[in-house]
Image 1 (cartoon, rainbow, N blue to C red):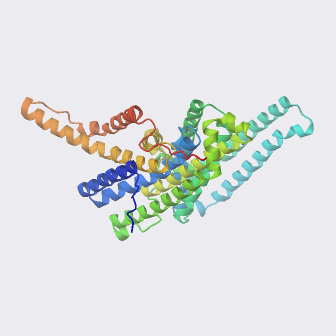
Image 2 (cartoon, rainbow, N blue to C red):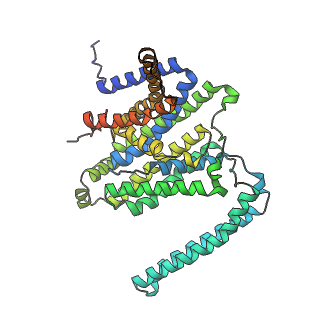
Image 3 (cartoon, helix red, strand yellow):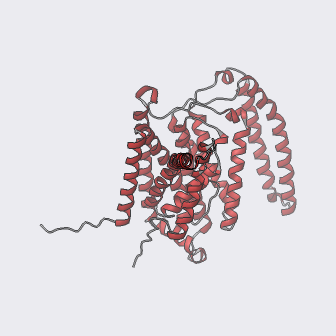
Length: 426
């Protein structure tokens, strides 16, 4: 029997071994409950990061509004899984709210009809003016009808409550809603340059957050909604470690399925066409490829995964707080994960997510420990009075660590730890 060489990829194997040792160290130092929670949160972030690596790595689209799509996923997880609110459903408020929604649909139909008035022979300028006038009239008419209903809901029921459906329906709805919103944003913004696209998506994310924060009748606004149900038995039933381990198994299955589908798509003709458009859009268009349609597909698919990851993360946190969605945690942290792992490399994105999230959560206790050591030495040797807010100063070490990590990666590994491996065909 001949000895077959074992061709293991050295870099991938080394990185996986290092990450495994780091995870085992955290489990041994902080306990199984803490370590399992870290892995679940990292798994949710990995799904979000895979959505971003599709847009950025596959399609070259720089989306700086990840936070908005994550928030939409969390909102749907709350809306679909929370129990119904009897104070709302046992009153006349649902009928009044339904009447407003019918008026909204009628108003949309009027605006669409006005935009199609060119079929009656109207000029382009007159059609545009007519559409704007109709849209303004419809907006104020709906606003006047909706405000009393929203105020009555907040006064009598607090908010409309949930739909009491299985948790997975909320996750799926969050992904679909994020993809749906991404479709309209893509139609408007994908024609912009990459820097303008980043600014536009960042602004859209802030608009989504502002809407979720201020529509108290729908989300309770700053009052938050909790506890959100889990798709697996709760900690009170099976214990913290077992419940989190079951949750981790669900997210792990999702990552494996997404990884497999993305791997097949990347090596299929569709993936080659996407890379051709990314590398040379003019040449791809000259070859007869529909550049705008392919770019829109990439953008919508990425938003879909961001919404899915956001829904899973929102359910695990157990609370829906619109103010909790901040760009540092839900946009730039994901960007660093993709940058470190390697845009366009799915395995690199997952490894980068684990590395960055471990650094993110461990930088605070490590910085606090170092500050306490320096304080002890300073007090004993130099009779130094240390400041009392060491904990808050240690928290800032997170931001410093991420900033330092970005600088090091861009200096020494600009293509990430695992750069994209573009297959070549003869």
